[in-house]
Image (cartoon, rainbow, N blue to C red; front, top):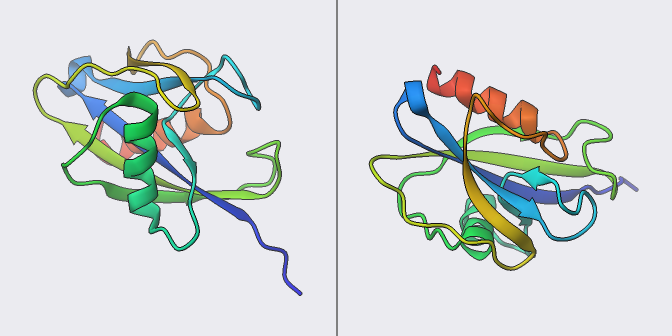
Amino acid sequence: MYEKPAMTSDAVVFRGAPSGREVLLIQRGQDPYAGAWALPGGFIEPFERPEDAARRELAEETGLALTSTLVLMGVYGERGRDPRGWTVSTAYVALIDGDAPAVLGGDDAAEARWFAVDALPSLAFDHEKIVADALVMLGS
């Protein structure tokens, strides 16, 4: 019998030019890491496509219904990345041109806010690595 991981999807949404780029974060309303900042994301529902889960979680947690392209950036499954157990996450990147709509925390997110990528708060899970990898992918 093989152990089975839980699976999540995270959305790394950027806006702005490379010199003033911002990333969308949520403040977690529940444990683990209640009160900490993180990427919008969450558990994939049974038989849900990972990209659809990323879009759903983004909309639920921030109010941002993204219609632009999401690009699969990577899969993260390092031991210890989630204190709840073995959790593998697919990370998707989106870049919004121009002004992004206002965001508001919802579902299990206490707050949603844009942060300058050069002034990020400490992030929950391994989200600092995911954001760093996304910036490399964008050439920032």
